[in-house]
Length: 319
Image (cartoon, rainbow, N blue to C red; front, side, top):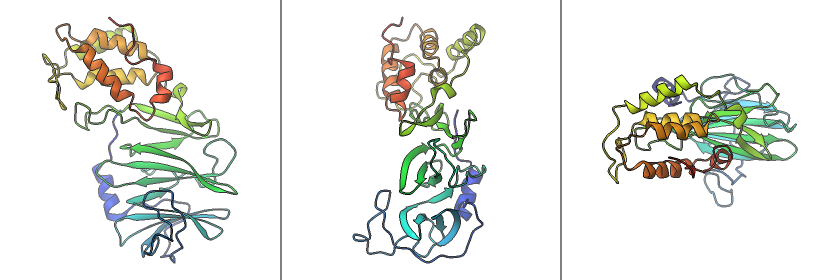
């Protein structure tokens, strides 16, 4: 699965910004004292002599829960700003290209702040951040709005403009649905890069892979044979890969794209079977490719969770 920010969406972004919350856009608000220092472009007031966020920007959205107020700002500056106040005191401030209160960047319904996102019985808020760029980068900040304010998680969605929180298993708490971009630009263009679907659930103090929500039925024998034949006949195959090759390296993307789909849906054994049966017998660099593939996979943000399901990479026993 590949997700890249649509051109029209970006044009809209650049022309008008994006604002989402529980109330309509409001007029300019007075500047607030800057007291937070834990995130990108955040500095303590003792070290920062410049006026704090919003620095003359217009307020674009606001959401309120109890003593908490979340506001976003933008324009005339092209870069936006986020502020969170508790009892009228600033507890968090961040500058980036733009922000969205409530959920994702695809105009889905916002999740009201104060919703128990994690399922641990405490009020939370989601704020999406866009760093700018053609298709990157998106980050989701999850804040706990309890007696003590804290940022409990920061999920790097990277290129996934369609990533979002959704209650997939209807248990009352929310899962994060996005993509793993570990293989972006590996041996191919971004447009062709495979990005397997991932689902994260809050467990033991952080968002972890919810592998049980990612699994799909294994392919039938007929489906497997058809996929092998399709990969074998792919015109992307060549006689050998040059050691320094970075793009179009005589191994088709269809090979590792299908391998990843199988691995991320609960079928690592079938994935390696596909690899073994698809690789041309005349090619002598099969082991080298498998090693490099596993190096990229093990650099994934989610490898520590994924490897408990996929096992050793590459497997020790293969033809």
